Length: 386
Ligand code: KIV
Ligand code: ZN
Image (cartoon, rainbow, N blue to C red; front, side):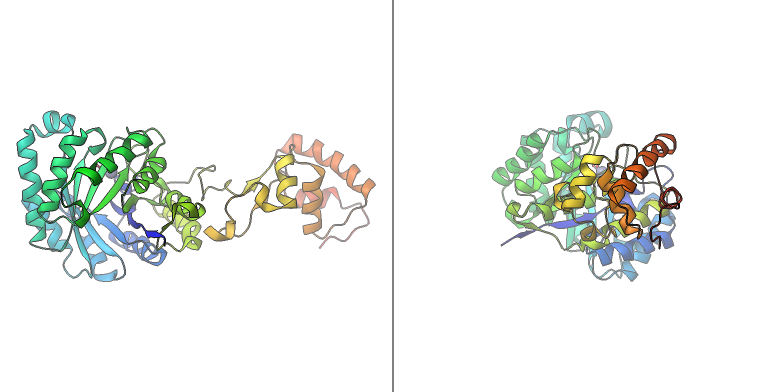
């Protein structure tokens, strides 16, 4: 039987931290409703201590969203935790996400703590958060650059204090997939009581490895992935939700499952891009405008014969209407004829050849040949143009 992986969406927290992507509470609610419909398990809705606006957003989502846990971020600071707890009042499944840095870099040059103080704070913040809610998630910031031995000690303290989920962020996107996977396995093998908690993967994309690292974590025993729509987030972004979900769906041999309705992936991607003023790059995996477009002659011919020749995802599976054949100077006769037939134009062999030569000249000049250009090209032929 497939293992169910929880999807923790942080578009509204880590994603919203991106300059220019700030959202009003009503915009957050609009996106949260779509995330709920998409089937995400947890919606991280904000960092309530950071501003009155973010506090109000978490409050509003706590009232309105019932099918996903609503999570609020806090530092390992009493007032942060209490503010998060207040913002979450009324939530059906409130979650407090609290923690602190654990790498030498963070401990000694940011927090100015000793390692003992980190262990004390981990205990303190989880215990305090548990006095308000059941679902407490602990994060070990910069876990990616934390020694496995010390990380295991911190996580053991957090689990003993009652953390239900332990988040192992690769905050700087530094780890290699084998390294991050091995880190998760080390925790599974060495942390007393880890069977009482879910390990969560939270990866950043500074080296383009966030998706690979998240999958490596899952393969080594993590049970939750933290991600954002379109992979938006600090610097190079976070793990992209649509990518990890489709990796799991397309690889049944992994025997992993999520609660995501994949047909809503493209619509929510568009909506988030528009609302957060963050366009999706054309070649973005799964949801980019070119993800289901074919423009070279060899590929077009292959796709026309059998879609599976060049597509591993059926566009309908992710909510895209259909794959498109883009007519350019690299297209061949097969693609041209295919599109003409779609337009109701049936040409004989010689007419097709003549039209193809004209098409090539035109494509060299205007790059992409649209339907209106094709209709113009064939207007002198005795054919049916719908
Ligand atoms: O990347 C990170 O370490 C984070 C934590 C605050 C969870 O976003
Ligand atoms: Zn992060």
